[in-house]
Length: 307
Image (cartoon, rainbow, N blue to C red; front, top):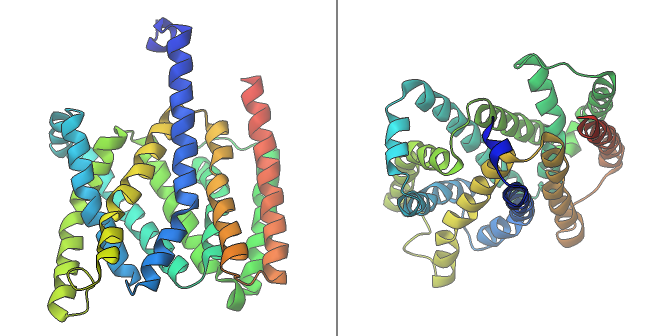
């Protein structure tokens, strides 16, 4: 008998509730993340420095969490497994590129494009499942993918005003990160810790170089800027841990719906708070992609009901 069947209904309900809270929490945090980067940008912190500080200050939080959870032995075990370590190195590269593109997009005033990337991602994930995992796609899923493709083509035609390259880069890098973490599951905290360890030497070296050149902000900025830079640790670590926890425990249909929360919040911030231009090209493309997501979500919900 499987472990799930031996658990009491109360235990299963508690786990489901915890997983749902983790899923909603991670996408809420990501949805409001542009506010944090905008604030740092206004204080004179550059995008590459932000990414380096995300890595540097996420490390102590991850190490502390590992110690409190008494999972140091598991981290050491992963470090002794070349295959697992190699997969985590690939996921580290994917998340680093994703972070860099996303921070650049936000600080350069392309939050709409960033949100579009995360709207495209679920459909790209379906395509990855078909190509890499050989999963079958229904006719409805193909139709949704085709409709989204029309939206992407519309943006490519108007690329000079749409920034579609940023959207596609964000969708592709995050899609591969999710694929690697799902195909080769490692405990969320352990995975984050190892990924942080891989990036830490590069981040620390870059920040020391900035300081040596006299262009870094840490150590010379005001107290408020230092507080915000230190917060890069929990701001980075918390949603990643919540994401990995919810992604492994929630049904795919549930997580597929939840992931629209983050780009929707980002889109609203871009248009309503920062007044980013929402052009006719954006309107046509978003209509196609939102339509595709509605079709895809309806199909996922129907499949979940049958299952």
